[in-house]
Image (cartoon, rainbow, N blue to C red):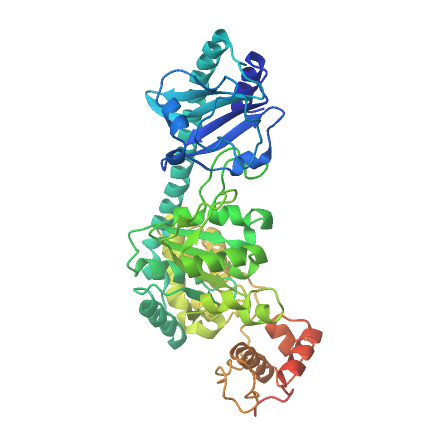
Length: 497
């Protein structure tokens, strides 16, 4: 039982009311129910927002320093809606006691007691409720302060994380290969705009570092950079993580919590592995992109403005996810305003010496190894590897080698000897135009885009649909699904010669 629930139980011991409630006052002059008890208590109370601008009698009672009885005598009428209209039904003749909750002279909220009969309160009871209200005021003040401190800690954690990485963002985008310079150029073009960017590429290629560079080069660089890995979020809590929640919105929500959109205000929100968002949250995200508003879980329709630049990333084929029904088509087009594809490390092997030098500087600093270097033979050994884990795998290999070399010069013997050698596979075909003669002209825009991806995968697999190296594997689809998709789109299996 929470402290607020204990106060309400104590109030019912003083006055056997039908409803006891504690309400908090927000800065916009609205009241919301934090806790309630009694025979008439209902979950609907937590969804109410009570605007004092339309409650003159209630507002007048709150301006006093002692509890006030709003209803007492039979036939007494107040020219305003009942406080809990829409959630609780009380008879016209009933008693209502309102006790302001003040702490250090500031109004924090109120305690109300409603009884379904008139003349329910005795003077001694009113005095006792006033004393109880003083204790409730302190508790509500402390809960609000704890919530503010929690939000500030979350914000500072995000800022610190951003500061640790932002100073390195330009250095992380290191490389001289044509494929990598294309990524950097696209990032620099998109950075000063407000356009939504989606970054694609295999796991470990450095998509988050590209996102951080976009933020660093943008007009929002002074604001926070907040990242969320969507695949690591429990689906049931995804809405709360993104948009925050009100107290009592679900079991365990003991106080209001701000979400990532609030933490990223006037900055950048990076949604990694965006394809893993649940369908319901995809719809909410689409609304934020379109209307720039959102609401906290349990917010009862209270809209909040979102001044945030959105960057998304995924290692999955989003068009394939759309085709399979796992990702919303309308959200795909909203996110795909400016795509940036990060190449795998095996397609930019010439950048390995530069990347290794950068990563070793960071490793030397983190492990306090001031004499750490790498020899030419070790660099050549690194260049011969295929790096299925990409830059992340390279960093892990160098970190292990740094330890094995005892902080001196890394040699081939310090590197894993069982790593796969580089496999020179044919380079990816250029993306086909939707005007490709193999694509039926009658298809709509989305189907043409999907057909383009299917044909590219077929070309890369030599026309093979199923099995190892087939187009279905490349697209991340079951072969039966790809066969059905090709039939629907009117595509043939033959690859381009």
